[in-house]
Length: 190
Image (cartoon, rainbow, N blue to C red; front, side, top):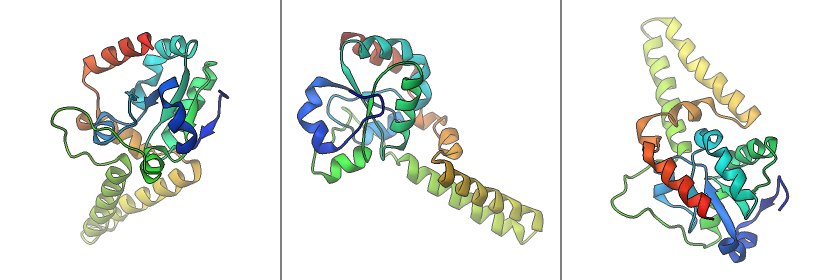
């Protein structure tokens, strides 16, 4: 598999049993629907998991996934910097579901999770409205709205999102401490 390969859902489906799929979304996003057999290693924990991922890559082909393909592309770039070949699922789990393929849900009761994109839209919108309303009291508050607008433009130009990185650190978006250890143990067995 090429280091920067981007595979379509229809290319992945017949090979799914031969791939080690790593979902780099937050645990809440993962719980709301993931590819069958996917392991959840959030993007911010990827550096911690790198030694285990390197070992697995010697035995199996890796497929990195997220909701749209942006975070998984960043994960592939990080792995490539360390000599680990991986592919990404073009369009992520959104494209997978649109192609009519099944998404698995985590066992047991799950929270109704918002996607990271939805969390960013809600937070950005809330901050802009706050800046505009408080701007009626004092014009300096309008800088909050301008700052968020500037951040959104920067995010679009660089295809990164600082707000998403911050939101990923909130407790509802974090793995429990023993989850990563359990997932790395599974990865060692692949």
